[in-house]
Length: 632
Image 1 (cartoon, rainbow, N blue to C red):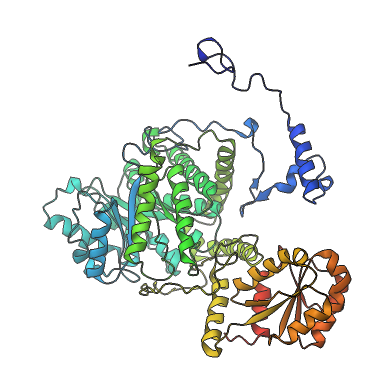
Image 2 (spheres, rainbow, N blue to C red):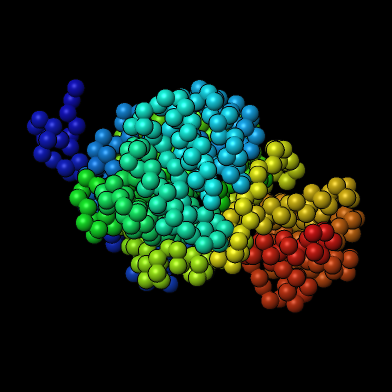
């Protein structure tokens, strides 16, 4: 076989880029400026860095640039060695991949037993049981685990305030099956701080640690406490806030466990961390890599050697990103999140079933959830590559930036007295709410799009019916508890109002598309307007006129609707928009909208609102519901 020309004798000695002309950042910027000009964007406003017009920022203020080079790269060490950015084990997830851990929270023990057995027979390697209020009753643990070989399938508990009862039941079941104490694996999942975050109740950390420490000597392989930062994500918080909360919880549990008699190395080895994985695969990858590096630094400062600084990391796909409307799109979201968790080096991954926001998942949804992981491990061979993102200039830079922001938030929580104090004082809730309001605004303006909900909705699709999930424990202090929020919730509430209107009147709320000029002139904006209206459950009608203001007004008058939306290109608007707005008002339109950027002349002529990229779509849709008499 011929050697590539870029290689010297023996296939070595010449860089791959040898023979190509050198490229500079200035040349690239010239090309960027040219593309921006062709797109109608003036690059001169960005000065000497036109790429700034293509940059974005995360909710932590981290700039995401369109280009990363070796100047942005960082040396993150080796897999299995401190600071463990590249993974906690030298061999990565080999030979079998990460642990596939399925969540079960069905309050009916026979149904839970059946679902658990199906999972374990079809690829799941471990169980996550939500127990107590909001899940399987403690008394049902025994029946639910009837068919489970506990020495082959570790069980992780999530029992909230009922951790003593749940742990006692699980350990008693182990003893009844004559399993040696040294073989007991899994996790008791004791997490008073996570319970406090969800409910606002005081965190009884010391008492929980004393109970956990009492089980340590007898069960050396058992994880005792879980530092679960996913409530921060579920409340709309940022990645850095989630990282900072995880570190603060981990430190609090180290203090409590050592205070209860465990030595520092054992206390660190008995913790498990839980973080959320979202559809933003790069943020997920970087967040998990940063978490390991942060914990390595924490344990280093505590005085632990390198062999005790790695963390056990469980990633669960985001609950906040899940939608009730068009839930099948959730399969795509969870696949991306699982991919990010796997590439990021999670030790265990839970994929939420696509119907999780609708209630208790059915058999099909659980099958898709577990097969998502099996496909990525077995067919995509994702687990055969150790830290596949390592060396990526973008990922390394993003990891370092998240580390810095996360560490700063961790320091803020510690300065406030630690995680428990930050929860009870409302500090954590306040900081998370600040991010949520910014995120909520971006969702409302569709700069954070939600496919199938705020973008490209199926207006008449009916969500599949599911058994209702058990209610979460009520908040003891709503002012400090972190509420569970879903990004799509407010759009879905408008869709619910539309469904109720359809059931009550036989028709959905409607808006007439008053198209002006030829099809080529109005199609793009008519499609844009129709898509936006459907996101709120409003049916667009009309859109067939190709003439001027008078034709559009006549078509509107015969439509039986009360609101019209003008749709056309800027050239046609310049000649017809003002006359058309006045004609539509004269024809009985209570409100006239225009698909396009605001123009003062059109507003003066009767246009009440403008639909355009970046406009407050949620506020507009809510206002239309009120104007069209859609009940709440």
